[in-house]
Image 1 (tube, rainbow, N blue to C red):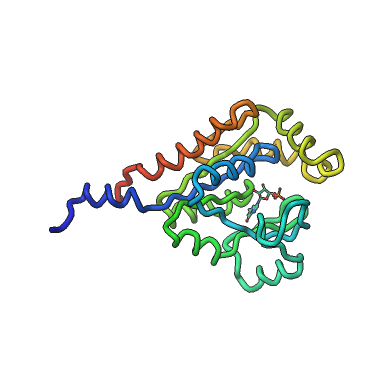
Image 2: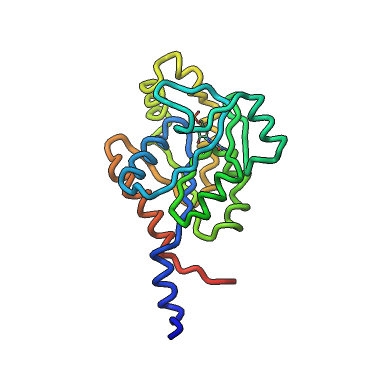
Length: 211
Ligand code: 5GP
């Protein structure tokens, strides 16, 4: 017997994927939070984007990026391989079309970390392509807190590269481009993970009417 609309919706809920786009300034804790989310829900796909920046200690090819030289990156741009790309702090970052399409086609929940200019470039395109997507703007309690985090993680030399205060101030003005604002405090990391997963789940269960 053919299933009724609500039976179909109930069964779809179990299997459909959600795309969570996470953005926010340096020191907002994007990597920490996504890593914890992935620990809690290992089935989530983390989109591996491509960058021309140098590998940092502890990183390797494919973790967390496909590392390319600037020339290789520019070739990929010329070949039309990127869904989106930006220049950020003097380096190129982008996501290849195939990477994104494969992740979306997997039917799994997908997490995609991009900076604010990228969000501006692709938000409408993504909203047209993926009905269950949520753009989450992550922020530390204050500019000072984020600055301290970057200095603590990077040391003075690293922070000279990673902390660009005027860029952070610009990014902080752009939060309205996102759907959700999530304050990620040091004292309540667990709660932040909980909030992020709540957004993901709410999106999965949302009733979307065809217009
Ligand atoms: P980091 O060098 O600290 O790993 O990343 C710097 C910034 O680049 C972060 O804000 C991160 O979200 C952003 N980023 C990483 N991959 C991409 C991408 O594919 N596209 C865009 N637009 N930004 C990215």
